[in-house]
Length: 495
Image 1 (cartoon, rainbow, N blue to C red):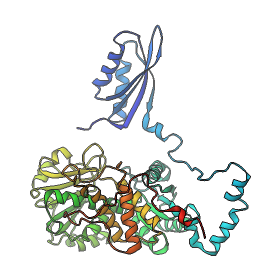
Image 2 (cartoon, one colour):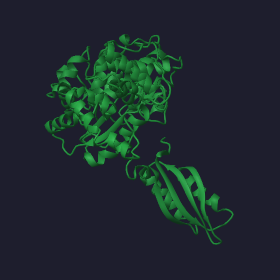
Image 3 (cartoon, rainbow, N blue to C red):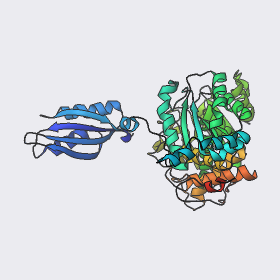
Image 4 (tube, rainbow, N blue to C red):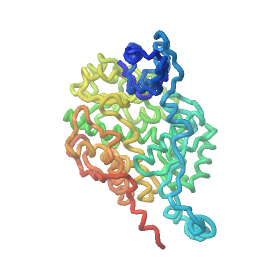
């Protein structure tokens, strides 16, 4: 049963008669609707009335309307105003630009801007690589989208995508000290997107592709990686894959299985599913079975899509056919990045003992987590109101921090595997792993620096950093504490 949460939090300002039972009448009316009251504040008191603000969590916009109607139905009550607290957070945008240097007098201005800045421009013109240490490029990422696959909302366009990109930029800054900026393009033409990214690349140390629909996202990322000398990362693909692989390593430890003995079912072969399959193959599972809307992907389906043909060639070694229910029968791991309510508890019951279920469709997973737990040992979702939340914020801030600190020009599979191991090590390295705790909290301050250091080491040395492997003993954990921003900025101040 869904629980009212802060995503639909409202504050209702309501007038009521000043009776001894007024407060109880108001809270009872809200409680009967199923909402959860989080605050009750008297803002005005008069001889003939009181005015209160009631803040509560609801289930949906319709549920919020039900709350208002319940209050209006009380004798003598009048709702003055309803404020949606989520919309209030977004008023005027969620990010801004701040100067890092003082501009208090003429001397400050002459060094930060003209005439002093000309000397810095000349130095960069002579040696373009100096832009990485003398400008914001050294800690700057473009969050680039065309608005074609935003959250679960679909193709809503660049303006509607902007709040998500702002949020992404805020997360970059909060968790890794990375300056990110939304770049929402008013085109869904592959060539225009690629060319635009090329044109803006000089200002950034990396590009994070976001919410671009498959299969265009694959071509855009591949061609930009060929053309640019800065790292290009599609978070919907690789961020998800990194966190899934880290979580799976710890889940396998809980059930005492080795990935090389496990059959893994991946439901959904879009951006996230394809990347999960690709990264999983680096760890040599016994088999991977991919499933899409038409059932199990296999060579005999006659798919004309090149992407599906490639997946068929790389998975399903036993040549299985049929629907999702047939795919999970006898499987050890289910990873869903697809759509709600595709799997039943009865389907989970047909999996092998000590099954692992990652039902990551958001906000409604492929199977009810409570139902899945009746038969699976480890269950994870993409939601914050259940244990084991698989959230990309565990990966992308620290991942880019490590790339930027290493002045990396490209992204490798070794970097992504290192990041996955680092995430797993935050839990596993401290011997805290259990069925309800296979990934750290998104607010764990050690995650970003741990991931950043693991990625930086690989970028510098070319070796896979982090430990662990496939459910075995944990490797070393770099648990730097404090606010991220890990590279020593001062060393680049001189010439």
